[in-house]
Length: 86
Ligand code: SF4
Image 1: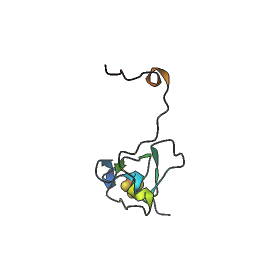
Image 2: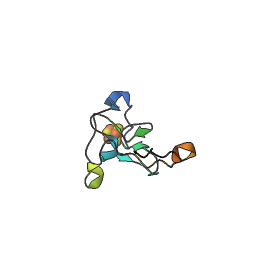
Image 3: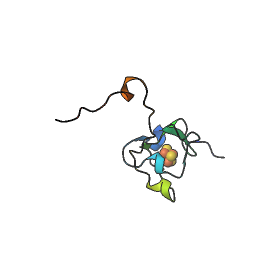
Image 4: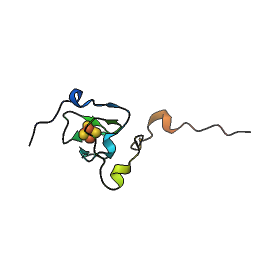
C-alpha cells in the first residue's frame, strides 16, 4: 500500500468538503467524531476536509458537515432546564 500523505500536503482544513462524507474516511468508533483516512496520515476529524475529497456513495456521502455524535449529558449541563415563559 502506498504511503499516506501528510495533512499539510493535501491542504487539510476546516470548511468546504468534509471527511465524514468522504469515501476514504473510516471510523471504528461511531461515538467519536474522529477517525482515520486511507490516504492521509494522522487523526482525522469528520468536519474537516482536504483536496483529495471524494464523495462516498449512499447515505454517508450526503452526511452534513455539522453532523455531530450525540454527547452524553453529564454533570450540571444535563440538569439545566429552560425557563418557561409566563
Ligand atoms: S481524503 Fe481528505 S477529505 Fe477524504 S477522509 Fe481523507 S482527509 Fe478527509
